[in-house]
Length: 116
Image (cartoon, rainbow, N blue to C red):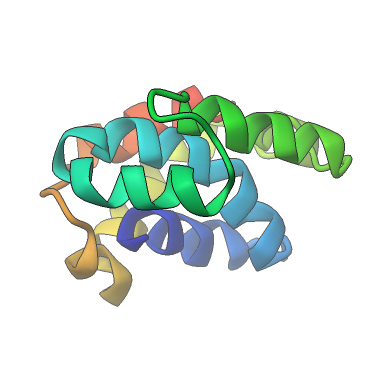
């Protein structure tokens, strides 16, 4: 959850709802962190009533669609031109330190681009 929150804090400074940003970013961060979260992903699948091999990022994306949440950052009017500043701010956010795997500025850029 570290990367989800560090990105949501940085993007939230633009006035966007923290929970909505978390929902948009979660599938992408889960996919990025999958290797470091193997044992936790099975617990999440079970808690959500999903099959053993279910694609969690896809399940969360589908949940976001069912809830009528924006499909990506672009739907909120967030332009790619600010991604470098958001990535830099995310590296400085305290939540960044709690991410299961180490992230670089390039990693944050990849996550932001995936969530466009």
